[in-house]
Length: 270
Image 1 (tube, rainbow, N blue to C red):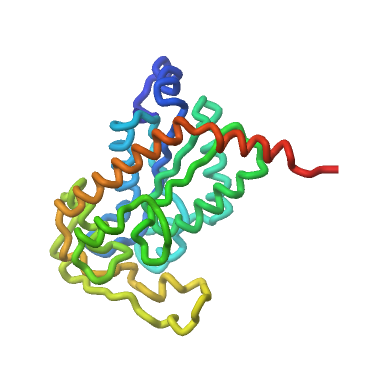
Image 2: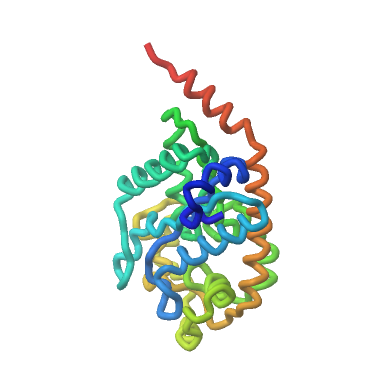
């Protein structure tokens, strides 16, 4: 159920019918090469959220087009908000979603940089005594920089042919070919062949502000010319099925809320 398409007289019943679960799809506006649109992450996040809700009913909030993406300032079209503003924005959004009766709020992000931002945001709510609980769905299961996540690594390796991936790559381009082929320029995609650079590899077990940019200074990686809509369809459908199961788990969950409330009662004060 898309939040913005409900009438006011339908809304309260929709909250009941969805078990008070609201999905917030999140992306960014940033450069994705000359073959993909600036809003690639937003488009994918909203598509996935809507498809998940068709399988396991949930309210779907309008896609949020802003999150943590400092690296895009070097190229045209990106919009970057300060992280402190983003923390306040997402807390405000969640407060309003909670005020309207949805006490379980699931973030589905399709922007890789949020693998750092959203865990910190969720953790920062720990001592605030909210009447809602945030759940961040770790979408980066195939990211070489991240362990875990709901994406199927074996399926990923079976489907995609590039040696390198990470941004505006065969993976993202294939998914966009499936859901919005009119927005993909495959002639431009075939010009891209960008292995990750090794400029900072000598700094073992350390992280600098330029780590990600150093690997792909033009924000493109891999060989998106190998993309196909069929690869995108198969991989997206697998993610959607997994996320639908995760929504069902959240609907049944009571422990996260109980532990959260107990912690806030136990906060030490003299």
